[in-house]
Structures are given as C-alpha cells and as structure tokens.
Image (cartoon, rainbow, N blue to C red; front, top):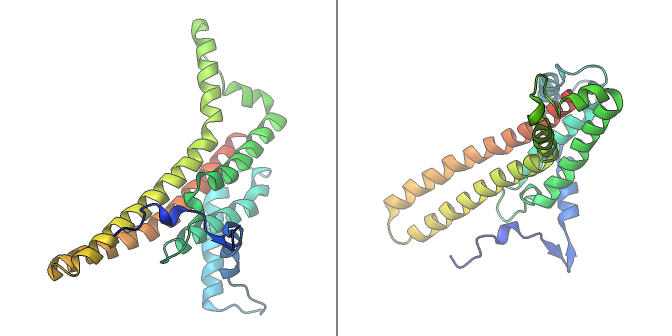
Length: 226
C-alpha cells in the first residue's frame, strides 16, 4: 500500500542505462511469421485482421495516400502490442510517456501536412479560410485555423497518453484495494476482484481501440492533405 502510485510510469533502467529502447523493440518480436506455403491458424487470423484493418483505413485514400498503408499498419500493430504488453504485471508501458507519443505523432502529422502543401497548396491554404467568411473575421479565423492545425499532434499524443495512464491508475487503485480487503472482509474482496477482472477486460479493449483511433486520425490527416 506504500508503493508510489506513479512508480509503474517511471522509465526503467538496467545498470543505470535506460531500458525503454529495448522495451520498444520487444513487441515486434512477438509478431509471428511463417516460412511455409500454407500458414497455420494463427498466421491466417493475423493476416485477416491486418487486411481488414488496412482496408477500413485506406478505402478513402487515393493512390498517393495508399503509399502510407504499410506505415499505418505497422503503427497500429506497434501501438496495440505495446499497450497490451503494458497490462502485464511489473511491466512498463511506453505509450504512457507523452514524449514517446509526441515522437510518433509529430513526424506523421508533419509528413502529411508537408505532402499537402507540396501537392495541393491551394486546397491546403483554403482550410485556413472557409468560403464566405466575412472580411472583418478573416484575421481571427486564420489565427484560429492555424492554432487548430498546430495542435493536432499534441491532441493525438495527449489522447493516447491520458487514456492508457487513466486505465493503469484505476487498475492499480482497485488492485491495491483488493489486496487490502483480503485480510478484512472476504465477500467484499470477491466483489472488488470481480470489478478488477471486468476492468482488465475493458482495458484490453481500450488498448486496442486507442491504437486504432490514433492510427485512424493520422489516416484522416493524410486524407485531408492528399
């Protein structure tokens, strides 16, 4: 009960060296691959899920936007596996770090925006000033639209960080309450443990949904600029 509530969010170290890089590189090792002509059920299910996800995200894109399909599929797999591994006991979730999420969001957002300015500069500039805007409101709307554009990567990163962090904190609090009540009242402990089990199932869903939402928003930014 005396454990720091935010101890699980501290970046781990090994012999004084940061281990976050090794943790980030670990999830891709869990993705199974096949060297045979006929795949097993696991590989087949994995390929079906990847195909379904990529089809949903890339249907609205043109030919130029579909060149990002491999990057977006890799992104959703990486975020999903990282979030799921963070639900294991005594593990570390890199996506609870705002710095890492910004490191993913800013380059992808910047790449989409730069592509829009290079290929469709008139349409990109038109977003800053909606058609039919009264003349006195033009400076204010340009400032507002510029701020809304620049805040997009921050919104991406904060949304992912907040959702994953909130779930981990809630699981930590309910788990601590379950441990404390186990020596006091057994029926109450069973009720709290049932709540913890349901919350864990919910967090698994949240981990997958947040990976999909992050990638889908990047895909929408790309669609607006291609």
